[in-house]
Length: 452
Image (tube, rainbow, N blue to C red):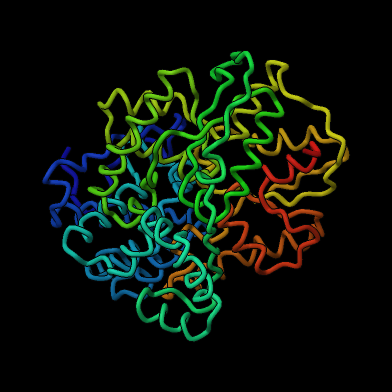
């Protein structure tokens, strides 16, 4: 049967009952960047989304699409001009929740809808055509920015500029950063500097499930340059549980900020720098842990989909863990220290999107619930931050709007702590709250419960 390229094919079922599967991203094929078939596929998928509309509450990409359809002459996708497709593309920050949680038409369904990776392809085409803004390229260069901003003579000037109304106004013009956006400070002493002389505890490593009891910490740009305390808390908690901790020998950005801009060539460069280093650590008996969910997801999902035939990429996917995922494996084997001298009270726990789509379950909640007299109230809703989306001038107001329900729910809980495994999301949410305690990282409060 021949189907129209702009209409979804017929199917005998309304949705898929099988677990979602993901096709490799064919980004190295020149046809991937051909605009004509891209627009045809965008129209096909947009037409399916228009007829379904289940994802309207997830992010601003779907309301933008549906508004374009409803305001068109035909009230259908064919009434939307191709030039307006970019308005939808710009609102997608690749959280993957539509794919993993809402959409009933993902593969193996016949309609084969992968909304995030289709829009990633559109971003990649825009990038190849030079249509992505220079400011987006600059602020997504997190490793380079952090390396410069942490230099002794530059560090005070950078941090001073973020607090100066005049400099923030200039940043709005030059970098497209909203003047009211919450910007993290850069630390003069990075995590890698703080831990450079640290020697792992001399302990006998004990395996538990897929974990081997020795971890190499992938510092991440954010924990290295902005919040090194989170990395120090991870080290303290893990070593308190007889898990040896060391830093990876070398690292650069995981690649997620560049992926979100469609700069896939830069993502490939980061793979060539990071993967060999991580494989050396794995082959030497170390597991890999990172404290930022987006970085873990990059190695667990995006690199394997971009480099499906790369055995080293697949090896890293098998041996990289979310911190609380790692700790729960240890707990199930009876190896976790559950002596907590301090309770934590009521906790409002924001669950980051990039942690949810790892399909590991609420591991942070399960570990923190081991602390006596502690109640965890999860908030499974997007904070609206997503790295650069929450600070860019064009999207800041929308990011604030997306965050309001999360802030409202957290405020009604009157919790002792507001935490998120994503420190950027935590800062974004906390800006709208009066916190009883300053700690917003679950690793920080777990260390506090241990009293170490």
